[in-house]
Length: 523
Ligand SMILES: Nc1nc2c(c(=O)[nH]1)N[C@H]1C(S)=C(S)[C@@H](COP(=O)(O)O)O[C@H]1N2
Ligand SMILES: [Mo]
Image 1: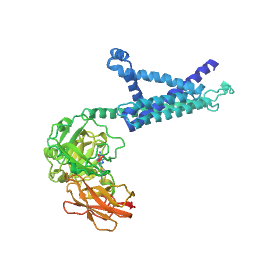
Image 2: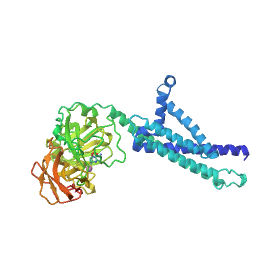
Image 3: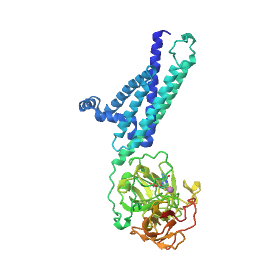
Image 4: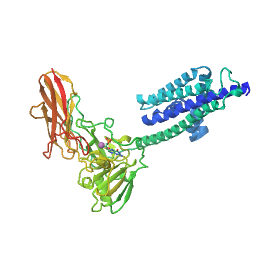
C-alpha cells in the first residue's frame, strides 16, 4: 500500500465513522420520537425548521422547479448535507479529537431547539434529540477508537507495524462493526419513521374531524354538581387528566377512512358500517363515569366525561340479534376483546358507540376514532377502544381477553366511595376540617355518603347536586376536629338502598371492596 493510498484509506474510514455515527443517532431519534410525538423527531423537526426559515424566494423557486416533489427534494438535500457534515465530524474526531464529538453534540442541541420550537411542543420533545446525540457520540467514539488504537485500528498512527504485517482481521473488525451498527440503524430508522408517519396521519385525520350536533344532548351540569372546596375532585374530568388503561404497547393509529365496524355472528343480517354511516345516525350525548376493575380502594382509575355517540342498541336493532345470543364480543383493531351482556346493551341505558369525549374527537389513546362507553360496567367488559368488530355470541361459547386471565366474565361496577382531600397524613389545627370526596354506583345512583372518625358513629356527609345515576357524586363533610391522630372513613349507600361492602377484598376477579380511609394529625 502506498502512503497516499493509506492516507485516503484513513480519511475514508474516519469519514465513514462519522456517517455511521450520525446515522445511528438519527435512528435512535426516530425510535425515541415514536414514544414522544412525531413532531419531536430531530430529523423531522430540523427539516421543518429549515422549511419554515427558508427565504420565500428560495421556497418559490423550489416549488416552481420541483413542484409537489419539493418536500422529497428538501429531505434528500438535507440528507446529502448531513452526510457531508457527518463525514466531516468523523474526520475531525479522528485527527482533532474531540472536535467531532463536540460538533455532533452541537447538532443534537440544534435538534433540541428545533423540536422545542414545534407547535404544541412540551419539554419531552427534547428527549429524542438528546438520546440521538448520546448515541451518535458513543458510536463515533467506538468506531474512531478502533481506528486509532494500534491493536485494532485499520491503520496505525506510528507506522510501527509494516503494512505487510498488518493483520487482515483488524480492518475487517472495524468494517464489521461499522456495518453492524449501520444495519441496525437502518432497521430502527425505517421502522421508527413508518410508525411516526402512521401516528402523524392519525393526528392529521383527527384534526379534520368535526363532531355532529347531538340529537339528544347531555343536560347541562348544574353548578351544584361541583363542590366549592379546594382540592375536591371536579365533576368533569378533562381529557388530559382522564385515566388510561389498555394493553396497547403502541397505540393503534386508525383514521376515519380506515375505520369500519363489522357486526356478525348470531344476527339476522351481517353488516359492516363505516365512519360516514355512523355519522349519519342520530347521536346521543351523555356524561358517564368510567371505572377500571383494577381500581384499588382509594384509587384514581375513574373519570367522568361527556361522551358523544350512537346508541349501541340502534346497531343491534339493525342487524337483528338472534335468540340465544347473550354476549356482545367486541374486538379492537389490535385484537383486544371484551364480552358484554346483550341484555345490558339493550335495556335502555345509554350504551354508546362513542366518537366524542368532552366536545373533542376521542383522543387517540382513548380509542380514536370509535370506542364503547357503557354505564354501570367496568371497562374490561364494556369500554372497548379502537373497536372494529362485534360478534353476537354466547357466554357459554366465548371468552374475552381478561376473562381468560382470571377475571370474572361479568363486571358490574361495585358501589364505592373515596376521600380526595385533605392530603393523607396532613396536619391541621383543631376546629373545622373539610373532608371531601366522591362516590359512585353507576346506573343505580348515590343516595347517601357517611363519614366516621376513628371508632365513632357514622355521620351523614353533605352531597353535591345529583347529575345522573350514571355519574359519580361528590360529597363533603365538615369535621369538628379534636387534637390527636385520627383516621377518617367514608361509605356510600346507593339508590337501591344497598350499602358499600366494608370487608376488604382485592380487585381480582370482579372489583375491590372495602372502605377508603385517611389518617390526619390534629394539633
Ligand atoms: N382496545 C382496548 N380497549 C380497552 C382496553 C384495552 O386494553 N384495549 N382496556 C379496557 C379497560 S380495562 C378500561 S378500564 C378502559 C379504560 O378506558 P380509558 O383508557 O379511556 O380510561 O378501556 C377498556 N378498553
Ligand atoms: Mo380496566
